[in-house]
Amino acid sequence: MSTSGAPRPSAAVLRTFGAAGQQPERLPGGRGTTWRAGSVVLRPHGDVREARWRSDVLARLEHTDAFRTPRPVPTHAGGWTTDGWEAWTWCAGATAPDRVEDVIRVGAAFHRAVAGLGRPAFLDSVDDAWSRADRAVWGTGPLPADPTLDRLAAAFRPVRSPTQLVHRDLLGNVLFAPGEPPTVFDWAPSWRPVGYAAAIAAVDAVCWHGVEVERLAALGVVADVPEWSQVLVRALAFRVLTLQLLGGWDPDRARHHGPVVDALLSGAAGTLDA
Image 1 (tube, rainbow, N blue to C red):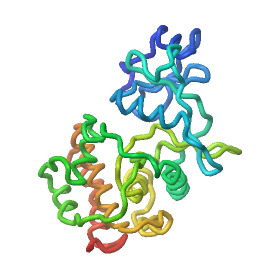
Image 2 (spheres, one colour):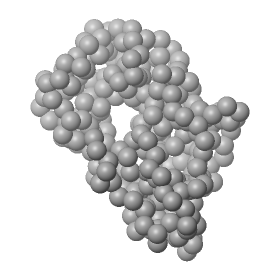
Image 3 (cartoon, rainbow, N blue to C red):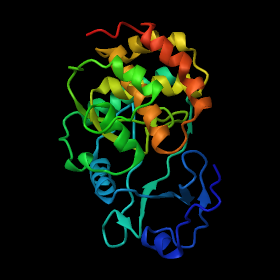
């Protein structure tokens, strides 16, 4: 996807976040909309309620030896957003999607740190493809007719694990740097069982980063969460539906996902019966 037309932070936005005079540099990854200006990272914030809530939480979240997060950068006026942008401190490191076991462990540490937070009301109404897909696969939104989704949805069973705030896009959003705790960034919040976050990382690793489908069961051991097969099938349905909502689902994508669907429904990562 071309990012040449992606918005660039204006001089006024840079000044507001204390980065006046810096030349913004587009960062790789994601959707190509994130920029670095010196020690500040800027990105369009999406839903403003979510953005302000996330900054409020991460401004004071206690870090551990197992993880850290970027801290939000306030505006000169003391807020967290301006003109459609939010800002974060720059953290060195690189993502490593092939290190899915490590990502799952880092996610577990992050989820322990946020386990006591309450459920934000905005989760019911954030209107983007990822949020709509997340609600649909958990039964609070429409699930469209589609052969792949039909097969996955037929295997859904009630998931009884406790719910809490989770990061539903971990695999590409953990930075590893020598001598530093891993950095969890771009928190995409959902109110789901913690196993769901690990399951999304697992299916992403298998579908897009060359991890063998046979490793799904072993990744469940690393995640050490109940109902692994059920959160896996919901995680895969979430990714399929998101692609549909973004206009990226076609016969080639369906064929690409087919072996993973077959593996899950055949019980390769555990029985789907509950």
